[in-house]
Length: 241
Image 1 (cartoon, rainbow, N blue to C red):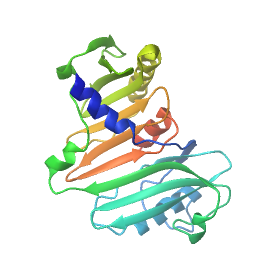
Image 2 (cartoon, rainbow, N blue to C red):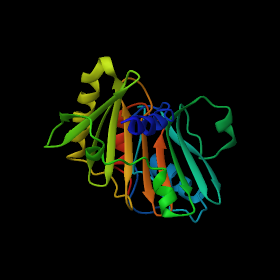
Image 3 (tube, rainbow, N blue to C red):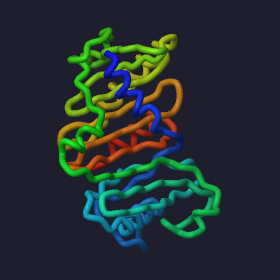
């Protein structure tokens, strides 16, 4: 029991904030001239990611109505990062003025390569919750969750296919954690998560921020964080292909 709580708490510390409604990315490369603003941003991001790592981007990025989407990228041999922002005016990806304009983080996507698939997998935090026990709780669509508590923290974890998912709350707010777990199960009945090479992990926080995803891609791990809400993370995650 203690091992489960410690591993989940490690992920809790990683998330921050963002906000939004939905914009759509094309499934094929098209010219920047003919593209919508979101398509232009994604095309610019792809061009900036000159890397041998798998470039994995979502087809949906949340932005507030009336705002504009842009991004800043960074690349090294075994790592890349894309931070998506919303701004009041149009700003090209990686423009110098991004350092000075008012902006808000929408989401951050990172990809990091490790020496082996086993090492990569160790950074995913996947658990088979049925093997770790805990208080059983009926979610929806026949899925059983398993609750584990300690130091005032309460986690409800369950598995769907190659994914492990968990909600975090406090022990005196059990109902909100279970409600978020049920809402997530319902959402995933009609929205498909991407297929990891072996495993993926999602943590959703019912009492704050800290929403987080990790996904194995061979010897690399993709993470998504810095999103405002659980729904935003799920919208982005289910648009990754």
